[in-house]
Image (cartoon, rainbow, N blue to C red; front, side, top):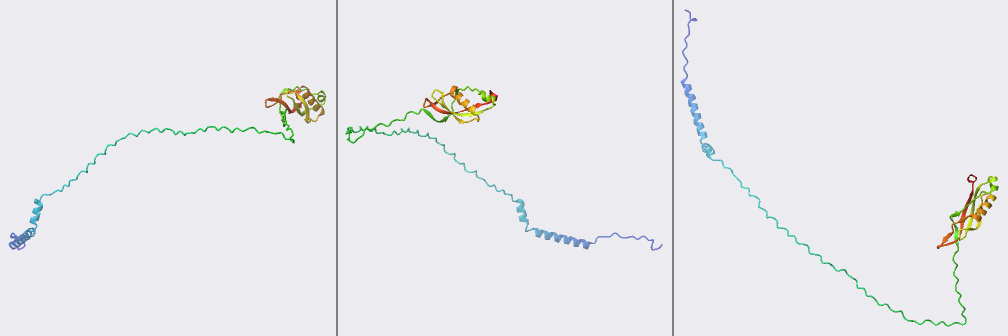
Length: 220
């Protein structure tokens, strides 16, 4: 048989005892070193594990109780004393009697003249200026001549009215432009017109009045 075809029988590998011993020794040394390293800390660790935890409790004192406020006493207001009104004292003086004097004695002088009293002005019987009087009666007729001539216009008259209201004088103050109308107006007012007389101080007096007289064809 050839050498290639031979089965190779290998022996089982046994552990190296020297190496195992060396590893065990190294582990033992490490354990010893660890024990020596932990030895100084053992009391502290035990104290921490065995000492109880303490909790500090701080007591908070309540605030002091304030005393209640004192009661308010309401005192009644004093009553007002009525004051008597001050009355001024008026001293009445006794009226002094006027001194009695004797009336003067007037002796006539040889050169004296009799004193004539100043005549008082007679009461005014005519109103001053020109007044406006109310009509009591004012009939008016268109003159026939002016009607045929177809003449019209207004005459302004100044009329003196007496105490009874009757015209006593008529003056043409402004002409109408027609002598016929002017003459007819003057004659009719003086003949038949009546007025309310003027009054002064409660008495009827004479007065001049301004009186317009109009002649209009349409009104005739």
